[in-house]
Image (cartoon, rainbow, N blue to C red; front, side, top):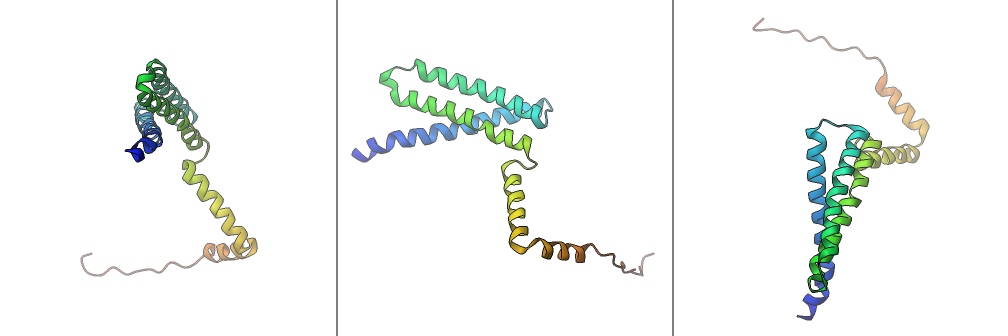
Length: 142
C-alpha cells in the first residue's frame, strides 16, 4: 500500500495533464475546423476554446474541498494541460507543419551546414540540369 500512496499523486498529475491536452485539443480542433478557420485565426479560436475548457477545469479544482484533494489536483492538472497545449497550436500557425515542420526546417539547415554549403549547391545543380525525356512508343491497343 505504501507504493500506491507514493505513486498516486504523480500518476494523477500525469493523467490530468494528458486528459486536458486530449480533451482541449479535440474540442479546439473540432471548433476551428467546423468554423473554417486557418492560420492565426485558427490559433485564436483554439486558444479561446482551450481557455474556456481549462477555466472550467480550474474552477472545478478550486471548488473541491480538502477531502477531495486528489480530484482537485486532477482538475487543476487538466486545466494546465489544456492551457499549455495552446502553444502547439500557435507554433502550427507560425510555421508550416507546426512543431514537426519547424524541426524539419532546423534539421535541413543542420544537414546543409554539416555537408558544406558548396557541396549541397553542387548536388542540387546536378539534379536541376535539363535532361532529355525519353519518348516511349505506344504499341498495341491504339
